[in-house]
Amino acid sequence: MTSSQGSLGVAGRIDRFFRRLYHLPRETRIIDAKVTRIEADLAAHTREMRLLLNALVTPERDIWHGALQPNGEEPSPGAFPTGALCREEDFSQAYFSYWSTRLAEPLRYHRKLWEFVFICQALWERGAIASGHRGLGFGVGVEPLAAFFASQDCRILATDLGADEAIDMGWTETNQHAAGKLALRKPWVCPDDLFDRNVEFHECDMNHVPADYVDFDFCWSACALEHLGSIEHGLAFIERSIDCLKPGGWAAHTTEFNVSSEDITVDHQPTVLFRRRDIEDLLERLRDKGHNAVPVNYDAGVGVLDQFIDVPPYREQPHLKMALSGFATTSIGILVQRGR
Image (cartoon, rainbow, N blue to C red):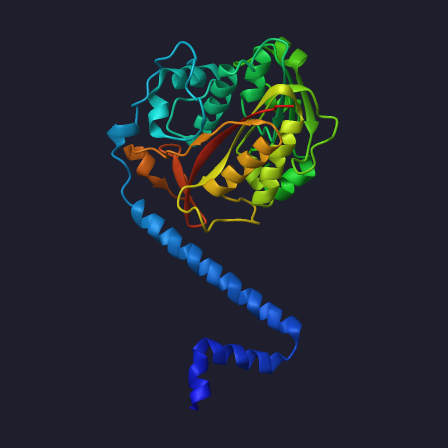
């Protein structure tokens, strides 16, 4: 072996071999892309294994099973002064029990329930949920929020992907897509007469929100914007949603938050993971436009259940944080008030 061969190293010699073999730039790009994918998969598997090791011990059943009992008769006047991350301590608060009961959702340690409670509580605190107010829901699936807002005599435009797009995304197979207004009807949350009077349904691609969606008092989405194709698409959607509001109107959005890293993350995938710096960049962009982008409390909690990372197949509870593509993720709630 010559000194020049030795200096190349194994990887360099392999790379030179393939370049000599194919000579064609297209073939080189294909090989480079395959190597990149293999490296990314290996990194994801490494992260996943670390999470799996952390998740081997499930919290003692006595800590969470039957621990939550209904104990609230009204919302709190100040539960969410800022945006927030899903945390164990929220679930034992009286306001949490109140909203769980009001939405006819089982009281459990699950981050999806936290998202519903965050949206309702945060909008209620800010006076957005009031008779005659107009609300716009994005990617509503079969969630109970549209029915609840209608029960408060709010006029609701609920939107979701068209049927063909939902099939392509796999949402229909998991019952996460609203096939129309009927899928949102929940008589145990909102009487049928109020629902029929107050709810309208449109098909809507969140990457292409119609220009005539304007003058709403509030808007919301619950864990939908991370499926728009990229981190930037998700942030752009939030910016666009503010344009749908009248001055002083409020937006409440929840999405996936990367708890593991402020650097590497998942982007340009069916599900992306937002980092703190992504959220902070968004809030700064919105403030530059004159909007009231509420600060976020990034405290991920110190409870026993806050430390547990659920892994597939995901549990009904406890499920406050989960493993996704080798990262630990939880839900984040974002609040923005339109300024002008």
